[in-house]
Length: 471
Picture 1 (spheres, rainbow, N blue to C red):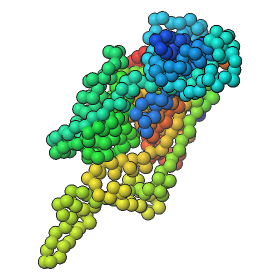
Picture 2 (tube, rainbow, N blue to C red):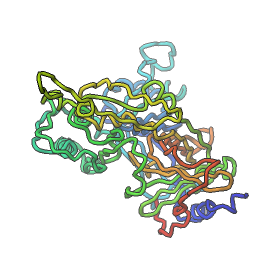
Picture 3 (cartoon, rainbow, N blue to C red):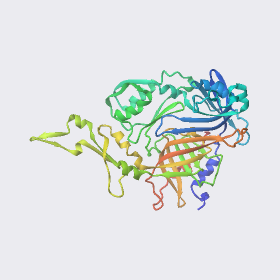
Picture 4 (cartoon, rainbow, N blue to C red):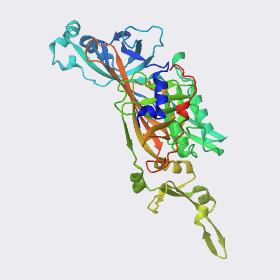
């Protein structure tokens, strides 16, 4: 069956005909060193890595070209205090004229040079010793890592507190909001607040204790792992733009409840190469055409063989109160009243393995259940060409749509990572256009029907009547 005869085709046409068009940019980098501003000759590439599973902030690496003399004489000596502004100048789809009416993405960040050597001190090139001669002699390829100024201050903060008669989730909200009040940031870069997915653990604790001098960035993990737990399907927190996001990192069942979701539609790899329009947005949806290839990995069996498909631990409350009862000079202990035992995904072999947890005595069942959350999903990577990574938020629920035997199939999941690479479209020094490609890593439900099963696809995304909005 041709692609045009499937239910996917209507969505392909909706994306191609939508008002949402890919934003072309000409990126520039400014470095402020010792009070003076220096402009790059060319930005070669930008690597934006957002790992929502293992990290808590963006990793931004930029490669740019500067006149060699300005770099060696005026920037390198002040490498311990560099402010950088990465600016995207919107340009047309054909011409390179800057579109002054379009929004201008720009952010000032702290810069750290990756190559910390000094050609002046090394003395290998005599032309470098003089500023003007060095500028004439050539250009320096500069690799620099950029850090959000908000993160720079937040991660240096220390805190300690005791919250009484509250849930772990409320204690986390209050502690994070309170620590953001005294940051020394311009109003346009202030952290606006905390976006938190509703917690699983609603048990009120007598106290939630954060030890004194605890690093601010350690507080979320401390509360989740040591103060009763927050989610039963993993735990993640991330600073993106002006918000802190807190979410269950492996909950693949949130698609129908979430306010904003992403849907990735897998198309034949070479059917629409380098298509300009690869996505559209509605009030509550991001819909992406995957035109750059996919890859999948199901490591469930490896996890089960190495760590088991279940867990057992002893309830700490029973240890303190007494695990059994004495009667007729006999002390009886019942396993069912003292042990908590969970099985995640049952094995088809019939042999289930539920080893004792490394925390063999605990009351935090949410952390224990989180250890099995990965077993219900498979990793899927999708390449989004001509992407706009700003539309993806931490912990964003998603849906992956694909074809099996000409039938539309779909699997719900959650986004774990979005890595964007922006580079010059050409290789010449005069090329001004940068193109972007984002590799999105998802954890998707693997219990969907496959080739031998009757497809039960929900094609609501194909018939959406929501009015597209400009991204």
